[in-house]
Length: 292
Image 1 (cartoon, rainbow, N blue to C red):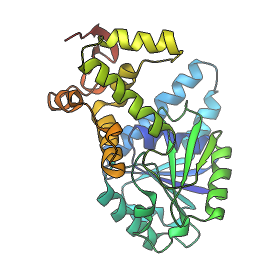
Image 2 (image 1 turned 90 degrees about the vertical axis):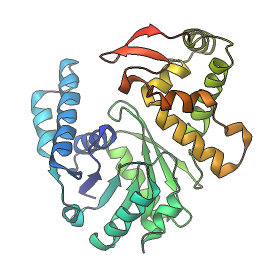
Image 3 (image 1 turned 45 degrees about the vertical axis):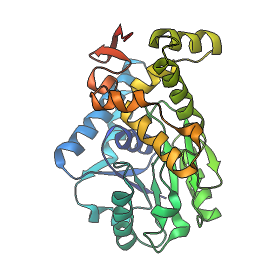
């Protein structure tokens, strides 16, 4: 495996491209618009600058990493990649269309991976003629800092595909866990998202305000970040979308999202990215506890 293509130059895609280049791979970062791709490259440059400031990287190493990343907007340019990692919008129809195109573009040996956090690997693979070479590779945000990658098997994902993905994961300095059956949320989100949802229930029922809930979990359970702070960081719209997938897939009332989620989303309170969620933010920093 020499060349890795990453589809989607957002925060996740840029991070995946960075760690792949740091692992010694030639990387092609692709998105629909040139401006988006350039923004992704700027994200990588900022990440590397931080690493230099912390004495974790030299300027020579930075230049070497950047030299391995090429960019494009034409999907056809990924035709010679050994591994394609898709990190686009969390929409099944979009992902299936992309994978169908990749199936025609890429040679038979190419692995096709998706960074989805909740959608079915088996359904995405159904758009291809190489279901045995399709898998989930779920990275965590921020990709350069987070060590875990969940490797997810679809119904027909082969053992060889998982082993090749393991080798890639180790080469880029990450630790993999294998999810042996395609199930929404895999391991981390299956546990984490209901945890956040329960904290929203406590807030919605008026048992405590956001700061008290977060403080209780940090001081009482040793969590590095409270559940509502975490929801704001991830984005309330994203957490809500994932819990809805669980609810619709499992038909289990324990995954029912609290109404406060949808109310806040309708108000545009999505967390850090909009400046307000369970807390109010200015320049990404926590400014004010919202008790209402």
